[in-house]
Length: 172
Image (cartoon, rainbow, N blue to C red; front, side):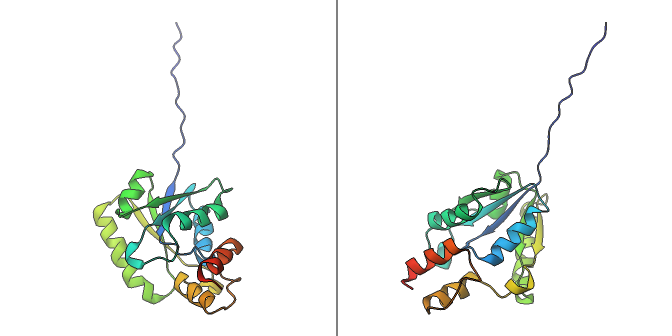
């Protein structure tokens, strides 16, 4: 008698989360997301509530903006998270890595401290640092909001949907 073994085939997806307040999401964030998409099978944009930062947009609005931009991209999901450890969000989504963007040397010390603490809390989750392309290295959500508030042109720094939302919010 011939016996056949059942072969189970499965795919292990490499998932990374990209946490942040994204208040609002900028082309700098998008560049990091797009770069990370080439390294991982799935990117989870984890939008933090970030009450301490006193965000301009609500968590729901920030998620909606990200979904407008990435809604058709099967490699990107958007989730919101309230007051919770980033490593716990990573575990919930079976992520093997946390993506962080570095714009300047001044970002490094804080990001290094976060990565070291995250490794202490979850040794199996790696921190991956990516830099945006040179033309976006100086872009930050804070600067974009200030420029918009002062009636400056932000079109080369944010998606048109984000530009419209900022102008509506700030009365620009």
